[in-house]
Amino acid sequence: MRKALPFFFLLFVVLCHASVFAVETAPRISDREIIESLAELKAGQKALGQRLDDMNNSVNGRFDDVNKRFDDMNNSVNKRFDDVNKRFDDLQESTNKRFDDINGRFDILQWMFGLFITVALSLMGIMGRILWNQQKKLTQIETSLEAQKEELSFLKSLIEKLQSLIEKLLPPRGVL
Image (cartoon, rainbow, N blue to C red; front, side, top):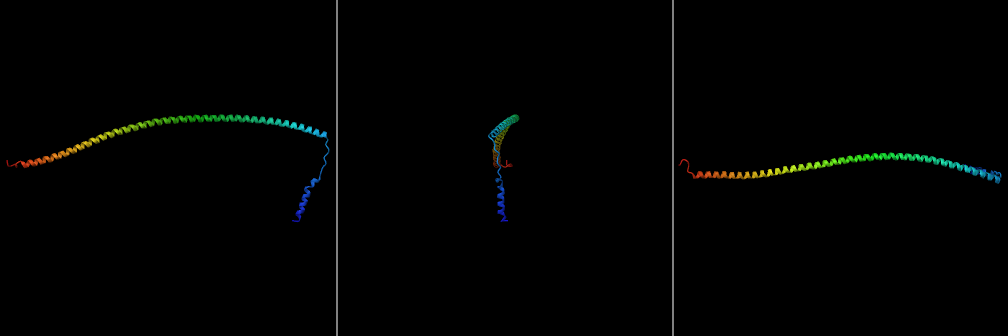
């Protein structure tokens, strides 16, 4: 196989370049034929240019139509977005009004709660003052009663002592 490889390579090189040896002679063209061909080419080129211009104008017209449709669609979408934004603004305004109403109610509730606390504290103060005065009077009365009790016990002991002294000083009952 190794010996056949160079042979195949040479065969391949020879066959690949075989077309180079085949040369065809071109017929002679006159200047007039060349000029006529050039004139035909120019006319064809102008026709192609005209067709391209017509096609370009047609495509531009179509693009203008598409742009107009896009603009109309864009305007429609913008109008819808504006409507949605207006609805959101109205909803937000309504919500803000409700919150303001609720805040007003909380202000009234806070004022009423403050008034209730004030009245409750005032009543508790009055009750505390009354209880304090009653306690003070009760303490004074207890002190007075304690003093009177001590005086009464002193007087009782004094009366008992006087009675015992009188009994000692008086002659016995049967003597007189």
